[in-house]
Length: 434
Figure: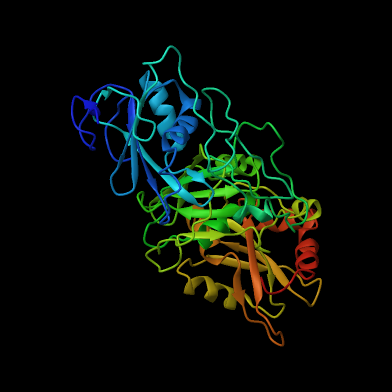
């Protein structure tokens, strides 16, 4: 068999040139990329791998050559005509699934500047410059091809009321599978319209690696929209990806939560992700607190924008050192509430209970020394179960940021806007337990 390989070095990761090749392993900037496929014990990419790789790489730039080799599974090197194309492919495809829930791509820059292909071999290598024109690949046998716009971002599949609940089985990989989407059972919610360019996934950086988990992050971002899935990254400590219900929810999070302080000396940063969906993680790794690094929230009753009526009751506010609390036991005292936050290591400076308008639940205001402690309190104590007298299930305390800078101002605003009545009235009608 004729030699097919790479010039200017081996195909391994490491130091590099200035070409346009990508590899799915670690390496410096190059116009070639190396792609590796992490598979769940399957051989579904071995056949027609070149066609599949060309199909998913071609939208990001002109593919010149592909060399495939079997090393710890299926790996490949893809050479583009320029560095920008390789960069686009790396940024958009790294971490994406070829098919929903499997064949996860790991992509980085390759060391060699050019791939040497002396003969086109369908299963191992192909030089698209050897023919009179670039050969378009045959349709892959593993599923119908996805329709990508030329040299653009991957196709965006907007969430709708019918598929958001069914996100766990909705095809979210780069290639579509011929499986139907299970209709959802969620109440109506505002989702991204067809043609929306921006996705609903965001990156969250700067989280405390030792104490953060999916529930704590949910407790914070759920104030700005429905949360579908949260996944912490194993290779980037303190970094998570969050799929919200729509791009508007991501915009709210970026606007209000980007660069906010958390706890003592911490700061989180939030930005749009280039991925449009998070695929389900079957066996997530464990975080330092021994909780799973991935969690599904599409069925959570703690999402606060599941219907237009429910969404209208939410007041979108930036972080404040004063929080509203509601859906707490009617007999709860200020000292008891302060004790609850002390147990969670987020001591409050003052508490003020609203006059009871119903015997079913209570609400009020709680103040912290600064915004960073209030944000930490939201993450640790939002949706915290509190036992109540004579109830079968605990009350699920809910927290949100106040619009006022002082307790008196927050009290007056809540009274004028009727929030005292609303908080007691609305949440007493919701399931007490979660």
